[in-house]
Image 1: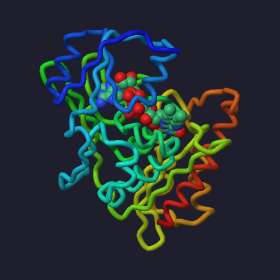
Image 2 (image 1 turned 180 degrees about the horizontal axis):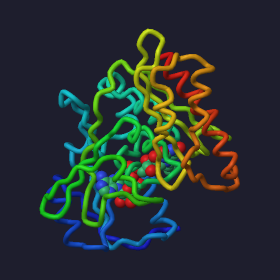
Image 3 (image 1 turned 90 degrees about the vertical axis):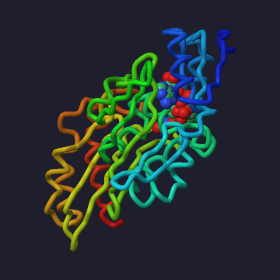
Image 4 (image 1 turned 135 degrees about the vertical axis):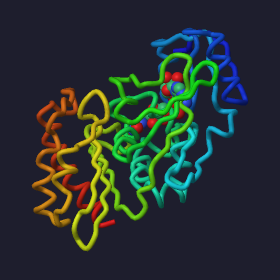
Length: 285
Ligand SMILES: Cc1cc2nc3c(=O)[nH]c(=O)nc-3n(C[C@H](O)[C@H](O)[C@H](O)COP(=O)(O)OP(=O)(O)OC[C@H]3O[C@@H](n4cnc5c(N)ncnc54)[C@H](O)[C@@H]3O)c2cc1C
């Protein structure tokens, strides 16, 4: 289907983008890579009067090092994140997770910020961002800026802390240098959205897990942290038996959907299996 008619603006600064959003009010829609928005417009599930394209704001594409953390502009594409030496060295979990998003074409156009704001519960990026304690910079009318932690960023199905008239500009990720990382994604066919997936990153000292972070994809309406698994892993050897025991609680407190890909109980079982695999692989580097 052809989208309904809309005006198109492509500002060259964040200030101008905010002004364009303010002028259009709730009739505006932000365009990043368009990989999720354009299908929505083509199906006429949304018909904004104005589309504000962020593609001509170079600062939003930057990936930089602020000392304690790496800072990723919301318009950095999935491909740029996967290829970034900074991300690979200091946030390996994010690089490995984003490498599993869709296919090369989608990764070439789609942005990390767009995926996070879109907040599809089966989307891959959120679990890694949550596990890595990412902070999200949101700017609003007049340039007001606030920083939101992952626990407050993901609100519900397709809903985040980014409100109307606001932009996600940066994702700040504390460095996890030297941590092993793995994203275990369960799909029926290649390039599919996750049925369930687990993002794990661990710091191993002398064969013992010293710190662990585990994020779950598609185990509820938002990405989730498997905190009981993280706590159970600390101080345990990075062995199959120890990790299996810790992973047994991966589905505690989750509320996964039931659909044609599997029912809720099946997803809960999958979460324990995928958590074991992800943590063991992460512990091996
Ligand atoms: C065939 C296909 C397969 C896919 N498979 C997967 C997959 O396996 N895993 C996965 O995780 N994703 C998958 N995706 C989605 C992909 O990751 C998209 O890139 C992502 O969902 C949206 O990013 P985008 O940059 O294209 O955003 P857009 O589509 O441009 O925008 C998405 C939404 O976010 C809003 N938005 C975007 N950026 C900002 C911002 N900076 N501030 C405020 N609002 C903003 C837009 O207004 C819109 O509502 C797939 C997409 C396609 C087309």
